[in-house]
Length: 55
Image 1: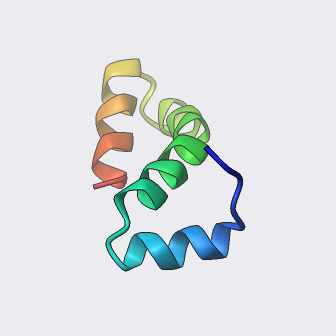
Image 2: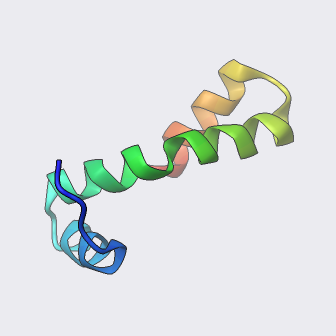
């Protein structure tokens, strides 16, 4: 995976580029999980929330 500027990844992902979308998810999923876990207090519910957020 090569590093690309986030704006480029967002533009490409919005245009249907699945790999760009996957790179964005990989870059942000851990932080999203931690935030969701603090809010819901359950790992399973946090994972569900993150999955829904990235759909």
